[in-house]
Amino acid sequence: MPDPAITLHGTKLSGHAHRIELLLRMLGLSYVYRDAPAAVRRTPAFLALNPLGQVPVLEDGRLVLADSNAILIYLAQRYDPARHWLPETPEGAAAVQRWLSIAAGEVSFGPAAARAITLWNMRPDVDPVRARVLAGQLLAFMDGHLASPRTFLAASHPTIADLACYSYIAHAPEGGIPLDPYPAVRAWLGRVEALPSFEPMPRSPLPEAV
Image 1 (cartoon, rainbow, N blue to C red):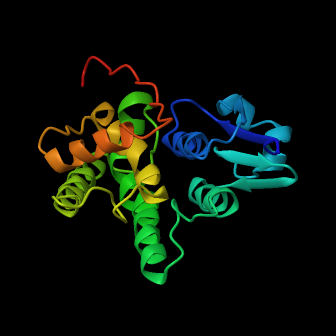
Image 2 (spheres, helix red, strand yellow):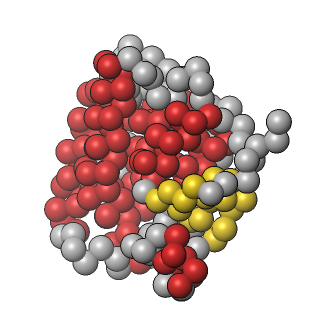
């Protein structure tokens, strides 16, 4: 049977949208990508999809869903009956949820915020020094968590936890956050990038001052 008509609204430099693209590709789902820069997100048509004016937004038939972590959960439960990407055991589900919370918290206010401030002077709600400190604390924690023999964040195989955290960690240097001190994190990034159907988020040019 053909895939349902799935549309993803996002921007190519959004890590939140990129995590959805990764899962769509790894589930083998066809989809239409609609670029939604800031001007588009202020239009009545887009605000009808998400009144908060944020990407990503997923349309799957009549379903309209915003929030990247919610979309990851939906896609994993809807299109992965083997529950590879979102384990259904209490322990497995809890382990994934922990990292989804970290993606919405420490990742968002650490490396993602530092990148937004450095590249586009965004996130006025976040102190840039605090964002870099939080990013360093997060990366040190992740490096210890990913120490051998652990290979992925929440299980012995990749889950949506890895996709939720990958994009902004991989692009942390764009926010002035070096990855050299974290070998286990860099090895984990390599394992995610080696997954079938992986496609990287485009690199952003670094300002000369960084």
